[in-house]
Image 1 (cartoon, helix red, strand yellow):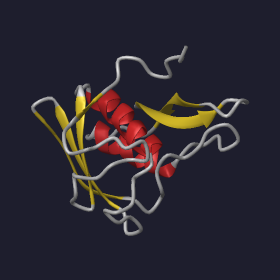
Image 2: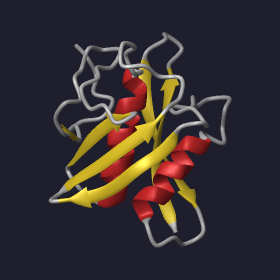
Image 3: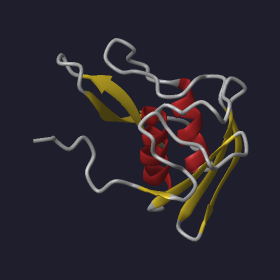
Length: 138
């Protein structure tokens, strides 16, 4: 089966963007969990794509309830005072909404859902998949 994962990349000018990568894996009963495990493994093409998650990240809880993916992760190196990388959160939302068809994701880190990312976005409520990915700024 194929799962679509979102990894980050940088243009020659240093502009960040996301690259959807379809990875063929053995058939699994839980597409969302399979996609998340592949996202944790990171990109196979390290020359042009950047990992968005650390390989020691643990999936604490993953379910879909009323069109919302509920995802709780554990990261021993993270504390609530530290912002989570925005690229990591965006890649999680894109990958989980793609894998499940749900329009939004509720995220928690180490049981805490009141954290912010490096772009000062709050995660105390479900995050909706963006309508445009890699939109050009003018």
